[in-house]
Length: 483
View 1: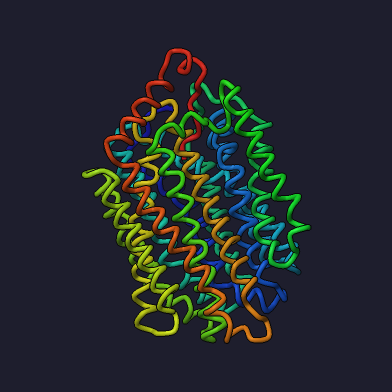
View 2: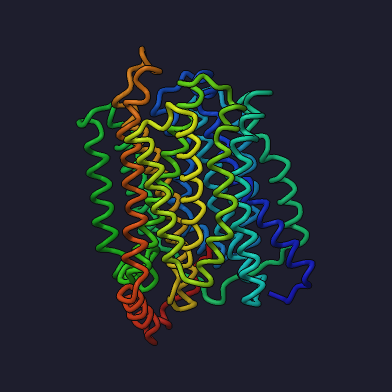
């Protein structure tokens, strides 16, 4: 790719951030609209879970495929295709006549979304070749996630309150079209020098694993064991097949040797735990504020700001700490704050008092703000350059998988304990086991942050990097999708 002027590089960064904004906003805005959608579409708790998980599930399944495809056929081409599919999916979501079609259209959105964030990050890393410039660009990229977290609940509340829940999907139209036109005009095409070969069998096994597992969890409270048992068995079979098949490929979809590195394995589980906590937190909070407290969408969005604002403020601080002192301190702060927030809800019913609810929201926002930066850093720490993009792709997939499982598990726990005829009276007690699960997620972040950031962990990362950097592996390994 030819060297671009400084102004042109900043423009490319802005275009890529536009795609991140609409994808990130889509989830935070949607959570505020859930109660309104539930009333209009006569949705059950599991139906609401599917409106979120249909999106994150498809995204998690296709991220690595989209990144490697972009490396192979052209990043600009795949990025523009993603913008088109995501925008069309948004239009379809806004006119969905029933819940089933809304879930289908959310999956269309996710197919487009899978081509945006990982490919945009790959475009950024190839546009900003200077290490210092690249670090600043990635810092801006991370700040956009914080902006979406802070603005999403408020924007969603305003739109739902003043228009309807359908209007939350309209935001994507002008931004998506503008990004598409600007990409066509200003973003240069690029490809990897040696892209990884497709792994269709591995891809199908990942889809079978994620899809079957999520379905079994969400439908278990209503469908019963006999119905979900085949899906649970399918998920187990897909997992075992992946563990057997992937190590035999020279260029697998998932490089299992990465997991010999304690920091990488820790980052993967931390990502799943933290984003499971986020998914469950938003799901429970939104339903409580609107369906139990009776707040309208706007005031519910305002109540979420004490969580969103610390996330926005702490994210750049976490990035600086990771750069200066390593990932341990941010992970310990994140785990402690998220655990404390969960305990306030689970043991002290924080939602029943304004003061404790405010404190619990602020604590969770601080924890989540600190956790994101060290995940990618820890995942790619010490990896050979040719493998760093693939390692980061696994970390990104872990985030989406975590959010999917968080909504699935917490929603299933809530559905099994709540009584529709006495929704408001039983919500707090039905949600308590879910808050204990979120507390466990916070403890996992804390414990793994401590365990996988010490000397022993660094030695395992060094040994893994050496094995991946052997001449045979270097010959076989292509440049993966950077996400």
